[in-house]
Image (cartoon, rainbow, N blue to C red; front, side):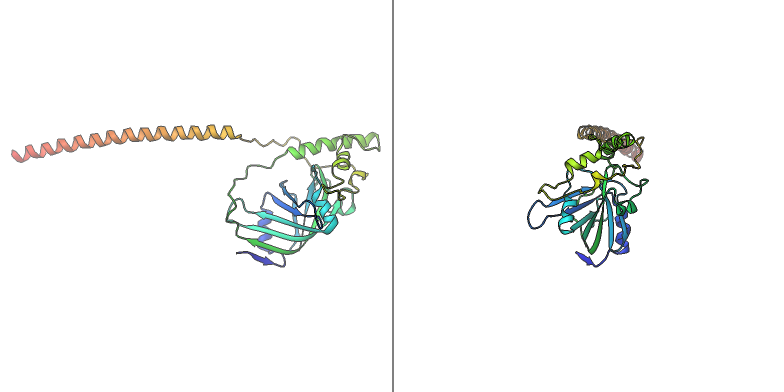
Length: 268
C-alpha cells in the first residue's frame, strides 16, 4: 500500500543512496509537453537532509526540466527498486536551477567533483515523500554505468579549455557553444539555460579518460550463449538417460541371476 510522509525518512535516505538511477518528471503550465527523463550517472544525486536533495544536471539534447522549473518550479523524482525487495519512491518538490558558472553552482559542485557536461545543479525542496509497492516492476541486474555521455562531453569541454588559453571568445565547437545552440529553449519555446554559455569560468571536470569502457553483450551473443547452454543441457539429459537404462538393465540381470541361484539352492 502507498504511504506518504512530510519528509524523507532516514531509512529511505539510505536506500536512495544505493540506487543506480532515477527519473525526473516535470511539465509546463498550463499546456505543452510533459517531460520524463531517466538519469543514471554515478554519484550525481545527493541528499542534503530530509527536506532537500539535489543532482548534477548533465548536458543533453534538450533542456525541458530546467525550462519547466523556471516557469512553475514543479518537479517529481522517482526511484524504483530494480533489485532486492520491490519499492517505488516519489519525491514531490519545488525545484531551483543553479547554472554552471554561478556561485551557487560552485558551492555545490567543485571542479574536483564536477562531471563532464554538468550544466546546472537542480536543488529540490521536498514537501512530500511517497512510497508504493512496486510489485509490477521487473528485476534487473546492474552491470555498469555507461561512459559515452561523459566521454563526449569531455571532448567538447577540452576544446573550451584549449580556446580559453588563447582567446576570450567561445569555441564554436565547444560545450558552451552547444549549450547556446541546443539548451537555451525548450520544445515549447520556454527559456532554458540563460547564463552558463556566457560564463567566463572554464569547464573543468573529474573524468578519468583511462577508465575502462563497459563491455556490453549484444542480443545475438546472448542468444548464442543460451543456445549453447541449451545444447549442453540436452547432451547431459541424453547421457543421463543412457546411464539410467544401463543401470536398470544391469540391476534386472543381477536380480534374475540371484533368483535362479535361490531356486537351485532350495532344490539342493
